[in-house]
Image (tube, rainbow, N blue to C red; front, side):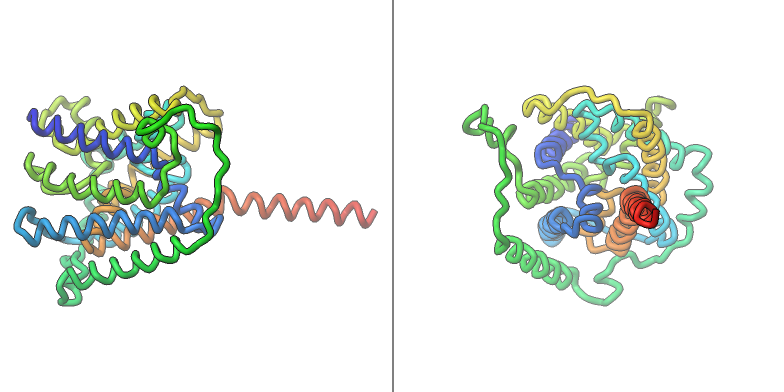
Amino acid sequence: MILMIITGLLCGAALGFVLQRGRFCLTGGFRDMYLAKDNRMFNALLLAIVIQSVGVYALIQFGLLQYEAGTFSWVAVVLGSFIFGIGIVLAGGCATGTWYRAAEGMIGSWIALIFYMITSAIMKSGVLLPANERLSSIQVHNNSIPATFGLNVWVFIVILVSIVAIIMIREARKPKVVIPSLKPKKTGIAHLLFERRWHPFFTASLVGIIAIIAWPLSEATGRNAGLGVTTPSANIVQYLVIGDISYLNWGVFLVLGIFVGSFIAAKASNEFRLRVPDVKTIVSSLFGGIFMGIGASLAGGCTIGNGLVSTAMMTWQGWISLAFMILGVWTASYFIFVRPRVKKQAAAKQAVSTVSVH
């Protein structure tokens, strides 16, 4: 139990610190792919995936880890991932993003986080469990992409490494954009850790390394999985309500550690302050949290569990989930950002035309 608490909290704190300081927001990254045609954060995610994939499969190759891809609930994953994608736009952050922004003092993220946790618990053991189980029962028994094609997993890892290497080379050749910044108030390591802006690829590399470390740490406590947020978040609610200690596993202390690490990073970088949102943001955060809880529970994971970990393990669930999460983000972005702007522009043109006629 002590090992589980210590390693879970430390791993989570490291992840939370890196996410907060690196502003590693996949919601914004997926949204920017559509609105700004900016793929940098998505490319950073691919880098984190490939680093984890190489590291974890190397551990498996040397017999240090065991992994089975299992089955794939395709209807639940497609529907859940799409709903989750909509939810993270409404909430203003994905599961981990909501955890680390709550630690920055953002009340809107607290609202989204609370309803995300409660809804996840309801989906996993409450009144919505029958619907969750019914949709999840429609399964494909082969979840492994390499096994589907009858190839060794390293073939796909090499392909992914090659793709990411090409992307990194292209990004390195782009002209550097100088972002104006205030005069540094800190020096040395303090400046690098708490003040200097982190490059997305540097942050992604650290996330990938932490994701590798999470596997053996988690397995040592009997939990054969890597990073995960949704089930541990639901477990916290279930433990508080039922009091069953079996809900307290390594993943629970991981997500609590994310909060602690994010809080430390936010305080040290002077980015912590309580921010109370307006009524519109409160309502949006509330429904965003509900959509996140429903979607991630159906899909069997969030941007971390499916988008980072299951993709690295070369599963159909991971990559299909990632695609439909992005589609959900784009759909919500259209109705929330694009459509109102188009309507406003059309109304302005109509007003100008009317004035010209008169």
